[in-house]
Image (cartoon, rainbow, N blue to C red):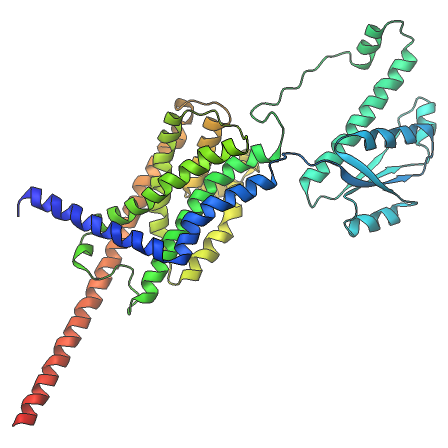
Amino acid sequence: MSIFRKIIKWLDDAAYVWRFELRQVLRDEGVLLFCIVVPLVYPLLYSWIYNNEHIHEVPVVVVDRSHSQQSREFIRMCDASADVHVAYYAEDLDDAQSLVSRQVVKGIYYIPEDFGTHLNRMEQGTVSVYCDMALMLTYKAIYQTAMAVSQKMAAQIQTRLSGNYTVREDVITASPLDVEEVAMFNPQGGYGTAVLPAVLMLIIQQTLALGIGLAAGTARERNRYGDLIPVHPCYQGIGRVISGKAVCYLMIYAVMSTYLTMVVPKLFHFIHIAPWQNMLALMVPYLLACVFFGMTVSCLVRYRENVILLMVFVSLPLLFLTGVSWPQASIPGYLQGVSWLFPSTFGVRAYLRLNSMGASIGDVSFELRCLWIQVAAYLGATGLVYGHQLRTSQYHARERLAYLRKKREVRLALKKHAKN
């Protein structure tokens, strides 16, 4: 057979594997759910929940033991803010804690008896803030509101006591150093803008691994010997098997990744400043690494449920290991080493720098090199494990064929004996 015919035969076998895998994806409800439905619906739900970026009117309870003009002013200014709503007044701290324990309010402002006395004596007053730390966003709203109101009241007291004659002197007394705060890369200072882009990239990896793992579990459960690769003439070469399967999932996730990384951010007005050329340079190695990572992991899946338990369990740790919701410098070294095994670590970091921080391709060259290294490493690992699976299925096929031949010989011998 000429080289040209061998190439045509190789491409034909790979196309057969691709068609077979695509039919399995479309027929298997579980694979269809994780590969198409979840990437389409889950980002919309997540983005819609956090689209407001901030929470407002967080209910708090006030324990005012001072009952002074200054304490009433402090309470009034807190209630007038956009982030806090004074919902209840309590007689003592025990009653206030009871409201927090029943989740009626999210925090407590405790004003002691000597609050007004200290301020009238030009001494430092104290306000205690108790926050429910179950949700960091409510803690942020309650604490920052109390800090802003206390600073504003302090500035007013300074101004009244300064004896200035002009408004400009009052401004300098209250704020001698003019500080301009500029929020970089997250102008709204919101949770959605900070975390959701990382979640979108993580969804690509997790759903890909889930879909490939479910398909592998289905193939094993339907096979008599639990083999991953079926016995078929088109499945006789590792290269064509890997190529056919990889192209199938790459075609699906070329559409899904475009939707997740470009359409969803624009729908919910997240920061999206990277040109499509930079996104393409990132998504090609990221998708390849995720596909081969999923194919490698799928060889460890014996039953369909195993991959669901595994990938769902590691989703939250992987989000932390990217360094988005937890500082990368605070992650222990051995955990950072573990994070290098997953494409999401470098994919998320490169995506945030390109799309949210305006970095160039040169600025994320380290992440891109790591992704290409993962592509090569997981492609080699996939070749090794698929080669083992192919030899196992061929061994079982030979055993089955020898058993059928022996059974046929016995049947023919019995028939011959019956005739005699």
